[in-house]
Structures are given as structure tokens and as C-alpha cells.
Length: 365
Image (cartoon, rainbow, N blue to C red; front, side, top):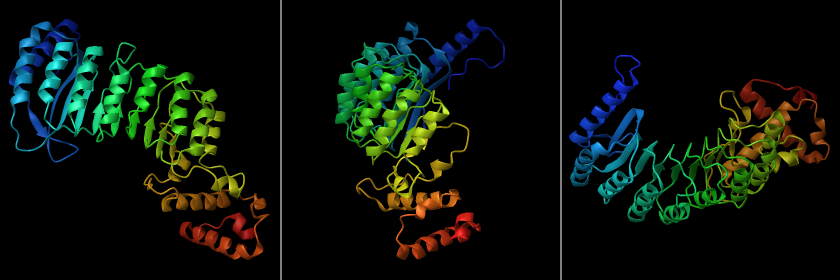
């Protein structure tokens, strides 16, 4: 870890110089490996607590570091490599990806490294040769029109093992081409928080989800989506049976928009409406407050089955929940055949016994 300030003073120039000296020392020492937090292999990282711009005078040290990384022989599997808050010039990016060739990484993180189009080109080339990567994090790197997202997206689609892609705070905004290429990359878990995505981008994302792709989770927190975009995402929840997690917290939804989205996973108007809801996706709309509906849908869904047992159980639980919370809505039973009433009452009774509560609707019955 590259520390910049150890004595609490405000000497910015001094802090920068200390950080620069620490990085120079770390690069000269060469890669240091530790236990991988996600697996049984080893990891290696360069991390600064302040953003460090590229320094041309450090090129000899970068050469030393990447040569050592390339030539290292490790008994255990080299699984993770990470760089945080250290800007990488095009030439440095090329050296790093060249050194990582053949290392069988599972997790690669380049966060806030100021990667530009040439850096993404080197990354795209690396993805073409790597067959083991499962998690790629590129947070706080600027993805704009100069980045060849089409080639990047194609490289991701060809990578059969890659499942997690994090592009938080990458200034994607409403760049339709970039969003389309990223969405069609084939990853199962996509993180797009803090990207200033508005209505145009929201429409692209919701349209993609409506097609019921293999994506299991997408995080869109802290963007600029509003009530006008609710209809798009509500429609996607009507047809999507594969998505397990949809995170939309810290956007610009009013209570009206929140209620509209919730209705797609729990609409207690009638029992048929409850049954027709989405029973596979957990919806996250709040960051701090407890969301009672988040506990209704269970995320461990078998996506290979159109009507998985857990999805059916979610449906049953929601019907019971609707019966319990709707004390005055006895119209639920208006069209229920009389011969089914004992079974319905038995289910309600079982639920009430497990919670030691007796609702007014059950007393009335």
C-alpha cells in the first residue's frame, strides 16, 4: 500500500513526493504475493491511498516490476492482480498486460488507473488470450467515444468464463453504443453504478432486460433515472424470468415510481394479480431503509427451469402475505369455489401458527 501522509500535515507537495518515493520503492522491490481472499491461490496488488498521476521518471522501475512479474515462479495459482489509484500510461499498460500473459488470472482489478483508449486496446488483446478470468473491475476509468467498446464487448462475449464486470463511475452516461456493447457482453453480474445514466440509457438497459437475457444481476444505483423510466423497467420485470437482482437505489424516483416498480413483484389487488407478479427478481430501491418486499423473492433460483420450485414457493408466500396484510379485503374470496375454502384456511392457519399471530381476516373466516 502506497501511503502518502503519515504525520497529518497539509503539505500537498510533500505528500505527493512521499507517495512517489514509496511507489518507486515498491516497484523496485517487485511484486509481493499474499493469500487470495476469494480462492486458494495468491494475489498481488499495488494500492495507493491518493491518486498518483503518471511519472515518466518511474519507467525504469515499471520495467523492473513487470519483468519480475513476468518471470515469477509461484507454487500456488496466481489468481488475482490489482492496481488502485495509480495512473497507467499506455506504455505501462502494455507492459503489465504482457507480463500477465499465461498467468491464468481469475480476478483482475484496475481501479482509477486513468486507462485510455490504448489501455483498453491492450486489455482487449489480453482478454483474447486469457481463458480463466471470472471477475473484471475497471471502476473510475473514463469510457468515452474514443474507447473501442465494440471490440471490447466482442472480447468479453468470446470469454466464456467471465461472469462479473464492474464499471462503476466510468462516465458512461447515455452513450448508447457503449451501453449496448457492454450489455451484450454476456456477463451475468454487471455493475454500472454512478455513471450518470439517464432516461436514454435506462431505455437501452430496460429493453435489453425485456429480452430475458442470461444476466442474473445488474446494479444501477446512484444514476439519474426518474419516474419517466419506471415503465421501461416495470415492463422488463413482466417478461424477465432470469434476473435475480435489480438495484436501482439512490436514483431520482418519487414515491409514485417506487410503488409502480414494487407492483411488478408484489401486487396485492387480487390474488390473480399476486400470482402474475415477477417471483424471481429481488428489487433494491433503498440504501438505508428496510425493504419488506426484498425478503419475499428468494435469489437462489434454478434458471434452467421456467417454473422453478423456489419461484412457485415465492408465489405461494406472496399470496399468503396478501391474505395476512389485507384485513378488510375479503373480496379476495369472492370467486373462490366453496370446496377450496378448507385448504385455503388451512394454509393461513399454518402461517399464523408459525408466527404466533391471528389476523382479523382469519378470525372473520
